Image (cartoon, rainbow, N blue to C red; front, side):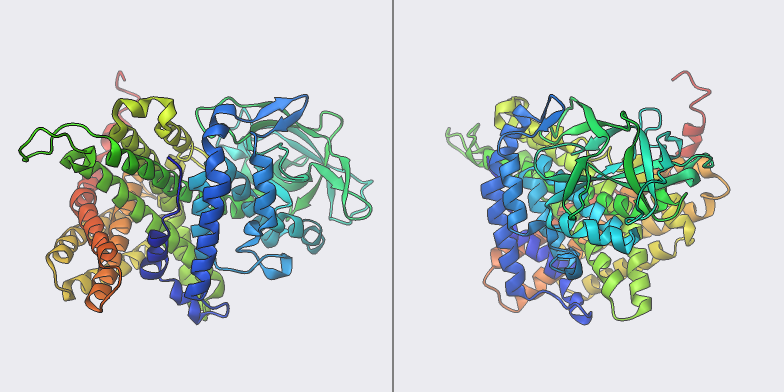
Length: 602
């Protein structure tokens, strides 16, 4: 089963739920509907013709390390060169750096296609995108001039070098060293010699681009312990040449590739810096503020990884939907006769397909809505509006990352279930989707870390102000539902109102307890994030149901498609959103059992 981008669903999420037309009130303006469609259709063609055919083959063959050189799977380097030649890498970046200046809300839909069609491939531009954002935000003028044009075009790729064997997610425990190099000419700022080892470096070495620009966290001599002693350095694979081109190879190398459960075509590297005396790098930002700078790249990546959850779920759904339409087994329930029918006509299979579809559409709506706020945080007309949208995207980032990637695993698992025994057989491809999906809740900060971030940083920092503002958005959707007619909208309203009330109770409880009872609050972080995602996703699907109802009432050439949006939103309300009140009890009381873990024989 190959992949075809769900363009109607993407456009509906952009236009009717996220509300991309809000960009029309900014200096940059909203993309015209025709232009938006042309870009999405071209990306759909590229993903279907160039990337999707490489997905299964890349999974089987994987990347190889041969004599110090990482060879990507057959076809990957050629596809990447076509990707760069077509200008796809520069879509959301500033024109002054060679980008196209288009909104993130449009770029996110395009990026979904790369991740759906070939997640292993999509990881490379995902990290380059984050490196661009980091350098554009924190680099010096000279660093930007030397590196941004090539990174924006995709001719060079970027990486994130945080993790070390002894540190894991505790970045403050890293030991890589950076010592000033006085002989440097200083053209790119203060130079340092970097030594140390990094693990889990995605696309740390490969054959798809001429140069790789590593963003590396390390400690300078006498730096204080912990996160405040960490600085950030730009460390290229090839040093700058005298003419501005590529110079000599830097003192860094890939010493091994990890053997993984999934994303096998993406080279996950163990990197050694400074085996020959020290890799030359240049500091980005001030000493001791490296982690602060790196969070620009990390937050960009967290939103993109959340999108991976949506993307791999979509790919799994398409495979399951196609299989259910062709696999003939058993008579239809309640019908006479002996003829067997396609399994898509059996109620439980229909339930599973609806479950997949509803969760995908909810997670997509949340991801697109967050990216629209990313645009408005930079471009909205007033400082107050920009501030509000920045608070909104800060709040939603951990939810998009964690809730959507959990959905990716859930939906991919359901896809295997629909295939039955054939789903457990690699040849159908259903298993690859689950294997690929499973990394997303782990990397770029585990989903437990995202939940802690949501409660202890986003919620506690402003005493719940941003969260309550989002609840206010939900209340507005409720008011619109109450004013509308129809049994489906009334049923959705009932569950949304109950979910919103549960979310309000949870917010108040955690605002009160995060400070005085942090362990109890920490035990509630994951249930709270799940509650938040379910209610947010349900609210956005309800908004879509309202838009679909209005469009049908006004006359439309797509009544069946719009009616399906009501079915999807109603299913989510009845089966998923209805679970929201049940999260309040573990949020308020679950910490009591968790606190006794050490005393129990568990």
